[in-house]
Length: 222
Image (cartoon, rainbow, N blue to C red; front, side):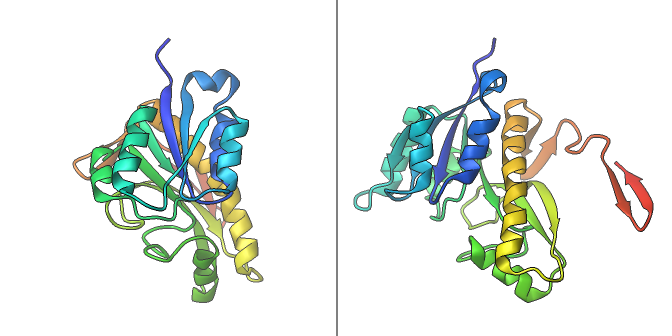
């Protein structure tokens, strides 16, 4: 049996996307993916409690000292094959991004490149979507580079914006999609289904095999 993919998760909040990964890769699927470290951006957040309950070593980014050196040491100690930013609100130091280029991913609660960038996180994103009049939002998983929400897009999942939506209602539907999309991308990475190649994401198989999309009574099959 090959060794499972070792994953380090970085989070700044309650950790529901972390929980989705932990729930997906238990039992039979635990042979494919193992979360080996959870790093919180501050103490007292829910993600750290979730990690402890699942027997995963949690650690907290110190508020003083050299954050870049500390983070580099933590990730090295975790022996992570993949680093997942699951609600991480800080800009990852450029040296860390370079060290994990093609092995660090982030999930964003909108369809990038729209509604991304500095300050665009959490309900701020959904408020901006609703205010804009956009009819479709969704979730994006992308590789991390040195700019907020800028790296190469791996996968997206659309979510309709309904006529009576406010930010809270839209956020709930997008979060449901995040909880399905992020574990699916982690699993696909573990299977070697995609990679970063010369600045492009290359899939070795269709992301939605055999999927049919209906529009005005007409079906389009990939």
